[in-house]
Image (cartoon, rainbow, N blue to C red; front, top):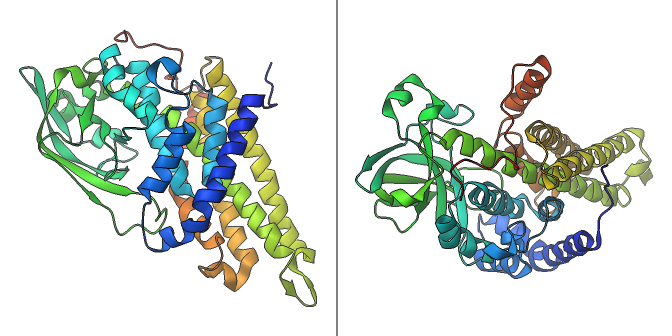
Length: 401
């Protein structure tokens, strides 16, 4: 039986994140966004102090041992203030830490997961390349084994925390014949440290959204990665990558829900203060319609990610449900942000109000971690019986120890 009532721990976590984000980040986020500045010390330090960077990692590996509902609540509260905050949860806590928790060896967990969960190290995830986004088969990065090491060569792009993270999960081809055949069973996953020789990163300065976050690229030129940094077995990289996306998409869905709520609250406040034709604009029917749509989208999105989180907590298959939550919530957040700008009129086009930032930020959610088009196809494929690969948190990989 699904119970959507929050328990005491979940309520406390929700309130703590809300208060911290409102007190420590909200007063500074507009300026940080305006100047394209990622405030590492304030944000990462604060998140680490709250235990957010390892919240769903068991205490034995340095985490807080909280459940998936807590992870979703934190994601929603962070994106309520700014998408750049939630991105950290998606990448560090979702895509990387939860993947290492399930697929990593005990040695990898001790060397990488523990410091990441404690917040002393920051982690990233690198699948996307200049010519490979939704089509993972187009990846060009290779990993050729030489003795007890793999030499990695290639470029990753649109990588969150590219200039910040200490460690990355990197997907690369280990079977070059299968690379030519575009057979994903030739892909493998590795842990790559920033300090490895041949690793170079830089920022992407031309983006027009999530400006207070760190997004960039990195290249690898004969980067020697120890064989013990191979995650799982050779050939399991695509499966690991999809598992990671399953965790990241969950936080994106919850975060987009927070963005809808932010748009709703800003619109309600403005509609009660702005007047046209002698009355508050909230009295106008079409403004009411837009605000009502935001409320409907918020409640539906929250229920979808809560259901997905509950399924994760009990170990049930959830790829389909998580994908649906991500698709619905991100598309709804785009609609909410557009309507919020419309309600604010010319002021919505001004940097004085937050809705313009919401509008710029929301677009990323309908693109990364599976475009809305990819998710539409996935949902149709499930119904038509074309899709049978449904990875789940409770499926432990054969190479786990």
